[in-house]
Length: 392
Image 1 (tube, rainbow, N blue to C red):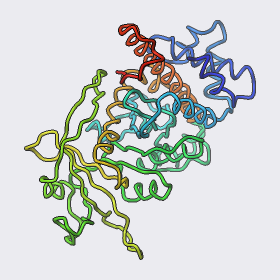
Image 2 (cartoon, rainbow, N blue to C red; image 1 turned 90 degrees about the vertical axis):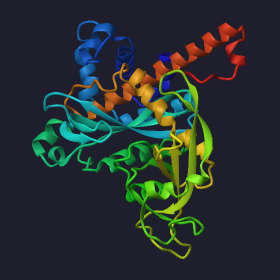
Image 3 (cartoon, rainbow, N blue to C red; image 1 turned 135 degrees about the horizontal axis):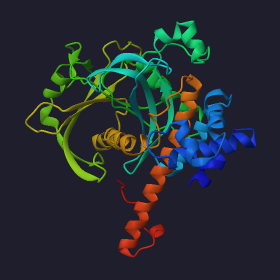
Image 4 (cartoon, one colour; image 1 turned 60 degrees about the vertical axis):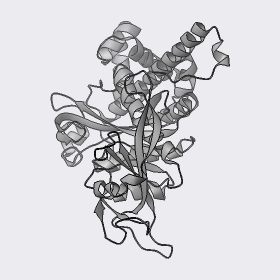
């Protein structure tokens, strides 16, 4: 698959030596055992001088990673046939202080503080497989307001401080210029969703499905529902009032690698954001969807979306794509080197993540094709005549 992806991926590189280095680096990510340091990559793809040339290609060259990511996104769209985009948080624990973006910060999804980098990846996801196509590195004021650190990490002037939510949104909204079909964005992290972030996606014409916390507050927008006119209400309380509207939904759980059909009870209610602005047509309406995995317990998940005309079945299945991205990130992405860049350079980090994303795509595609071929061989049916199965 390197020979299939490579020409499109490296088409934006003007020089043949750059294209050769790009392919070397990609093949090294796929072949090297253990941590994907430049030294390890050079050891499996080249001879004397390869380490220095690969280091220069990643950390000191001037090529722009955006056209390469756009080409990757177009390839992934054809391969994955995504139903949604998923914004996946990726904290990277590191020792030392030299690598760009290192800070100590609390990571909500881990429940504790981490010394390292915090990044967000945009993944194109179907129930069968997923792959990342864009990345945003969260940089604090300690990096952006310190001229020495900024110069040492070669952080461009256009990079400004963003909140985690703004960094996450940037990873998705940049893709709108890449000639791929816009898909709903699923945001699985409860802790950086804000009204401003949701409104930004809505204004850009990007549908969103965002996980909320039980104590987040919304206004009931349906005049026939309990709580209408009562002002902002915690979403956990709001959903408890509509337990009688729950109905079963089937969805495919890919969390363990072997897809399993599961059932949840779900219910939805039309809501407004607490700070919704009034207009001639009234404030924008959203749908709050609750999920119960234990029928006698409280809701286990809370999702807010502007896809108010989409069925609860379809919304649940899109929200559950977060299981696929989490699995693929851990099982394939980390082996492809997504967490392994050890250099100081901001631009080097982005170039490495671009090529590691391509390596992930090659690996996940090859694994999916192998799964398809094994399934076809076991049934005696040519793989080209079978519907694609749900891969693990």
